[in-house]
Length: 50
Image 1 (cartoon, rainbow, N blue to C red):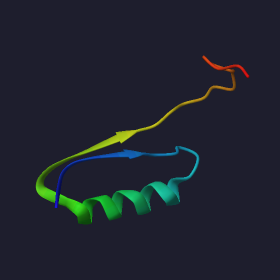
Image 2: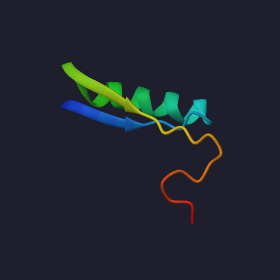
Image 3: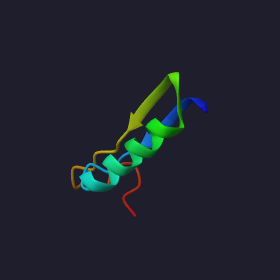
Image 4: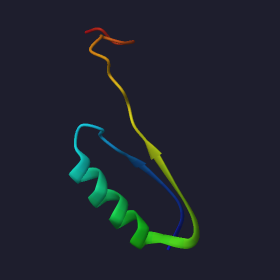
């Protein structure tokens, strides 16, 4: 069992995120920490415009 897990979630795909969270919960220890990360791209080039 894992004590800490970090999942990258795509806000555009709810189904994939739900599957990832379900799988993570099976791998996570009862007192473990689950962290979620998501990146929002508002249509601009951001830091890397190429």
